[in-house]
Length: 226
Ligand code: HEM
Image 1 (tube, rainbow, N blue to C red):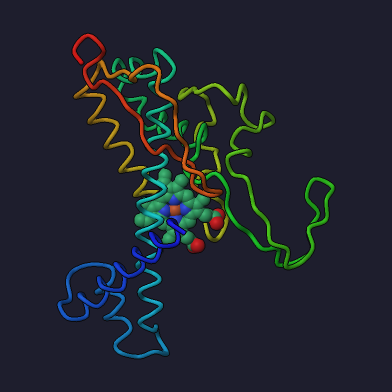
Image 2 (cartoon, rainbow, N blue to C red; image 1 turned 90 degrees about the vertical axis):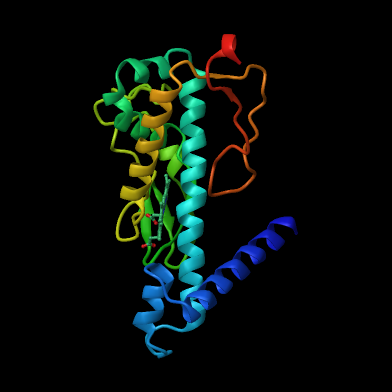
């Protein structure tokens, strides 16, 4: 019930945003969609615009937040990973890719079979709804050597499925990569001694698709300076 209420509140926020841009257009996505619509329901309805704005804000915010927390967790939990980036910041883009593989922000994703298909000896019938475990594929030891180890120097570090695959592959992947690399570069530079606060129990959000932490506590300047 709480989740439903939150989701509805967020939808109402998106509706109000579109209404506000209708009255005062700006240089942004909802204003552009309204301009394309030109008052014509045949092109786009107002409700479709609200849904698009709702979808992109959710996709853009939730997945990056989850993925970023997961990367910090991987980097700070295992001793040496953070220091490795401090010593060699050029490794940061690969660390972001490895973080996405190691613990993707979007753990599972939906698919519907458009025709009968045989996968791993199992026939998936046309129209079947499937939950694809991207997180599991990203730890497949037939594709990634030593898959449970976080290693930004692995040769095939970019070959993960964290952003999906095919015609609906994540449209925001370049933006997500840019945000994550920028944030990591700034924090590695500013807080080279960052350490996790010990004895905290990671609290993973209880959903099927996004996988992220609700909190992750760290001493920005290391234990001695906390
Ligand atoms: C680390 C961050 C992100 C992760 C892990 C992620 C993951 C995904 C995944 C797994 C899909 C489904 C792909 C498929 O069906 O094959 C997807 C689709 C999508 N993502 Fe992302 N995403 C992230 C960031 C973003 C950002 C920043 C935006 C936009 C600002 C965004 C917008 C979208 C949209 C619009 C789709 C639907 C694309 C379509 O159906 O054609 N995502 N994302």
